[in-house]
Image (cartoon, rainbow, N blue to C red):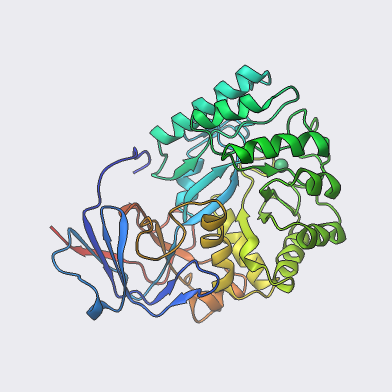
Length: 398
Ligand SMILES: [Zn+2]
């Protein structure tokens, strides 16, 4: 099941006997529902079994009382091509992340490509090629939104118009290229926004030798749509400056696994105190110097819930519905009309937590029992998480 191309229809899928349904919606994180119906990859009903049209499914799944949540969205990855990363010389990292519950990944720039072009025509060509390649090929079925150019000095508005017309919707991390000054970044971010391209800025100290510092004043002046790895990637700004960014900017607060963990907690708590929890989104920033982290999203969720003392059902929304809304994706929420991208979880065997949510609040990661993308089963019991207590079963269909 490693390489599943895009395409293929799910037909009618009925998922019954769901023990806990996490919606992804931070205003209503838990749904009073035990059944989901999917037709050709799109959710058509969510509710109690007696209220849903469950007749004649092509596929019937008994969730066996486990938790259904939207598939996790990793807001910050650095893909290159296919399921290969040259950063740590690994293959299969995207499929492995799918076994960690990730169904969508968003590129923050294809920066690890050996010999990455930095001239303007070259960087545009790379972005368009990466967008096309991942649109045509989904490792493990994961939706990889790629083609995120790293902006360089000398770009003009028509470059952004050309990228947008060619299907590019994202900028890679602002600050990884030669544009590092606030006033320069601000102009290009505004051009990108005008042409419908969403932007992310690198925040904090240099990632590796050769990259540079982006401080809070540059982040505020550039005003990118996403304050990328607000907790550093790896080196964080001071906690005071991070809290100032949460307060003075209204943009997305992106927290990553590969950053400073203490500041990750501080940023999430600041957002809650400022009454803007909907701004918090999560990513891994993998692959990077810290490596490939197939369970990075689940580990970050457990960190924020346990040490950050944030209810687990809210933290799951940071990794799903918040990201979907801020990035205008049709996944990430369990509601009619959304993509049927799901992760089925249960408490890991022998956790001290009595329920899934309690186990996460105690700092344990859940066991993944099944992953579904566009209504198609992409994995059964995860090969990477600790074993889930119960796992869903495909029990019928025609
Ligand atoms: Zn970065």
